[in-house]
Length: 257
Image (cartoon, rainbow, N blue to C red; front, side):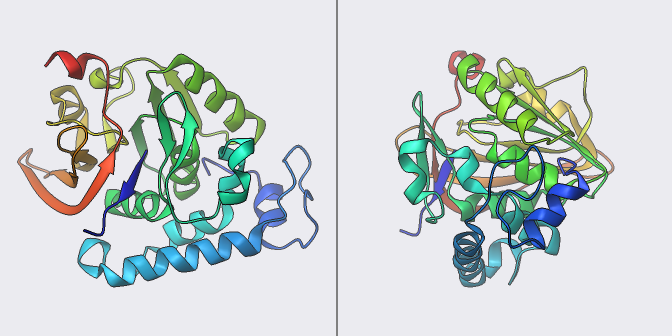
């Protein structure tokens, strides 16, 4: 739910083949028509240029898995109807209830920074539209995504959207992400798509040794810093600040800390 500051999911085979190989929109039964592949390719080219200009963040290019996920997941499925014309612009867009769908560059970079393996289980805090969860799940064809959203209406819509699109390795939970999901832990990766001034300790505790946590840190209304926390195999924590960003604030128990 953020933007960059300059200043799978297990897809059914028919859906993947329909998106990549077919020239007929809506060729996959049960999936919405997808006639905007050219726009998506142009969006990804823009993302690639951003990544190349900032090669100190994730390297000179995205991993093949992240690049492919950005190419095959139709962002317009996750954008409100009145903003469909802008779905493939490389910028954040409002989705209602004070939330946004993040800028594609940020979605790609945060996913890449997790450095997850195809069979890993990850946690996303802040489901929003469900787009980031769809990208993560595409990158994890043998893995699983748990995503939690504090706004009930957003969680309900994302859950329905992901189910309708047959993303069958994602579970959308409704609740306060500050506490994470201890019953599903540990996680190989944790992504937080809202900003806080500190990393919630429960999330650190639920991170598997060798895993990474990616989230923006900083005050609401000001530039935050996209930060990568890595838990080494011996449990030692390392932190790296990688990019100035601006995200909506994390809400819930974090407000009382």
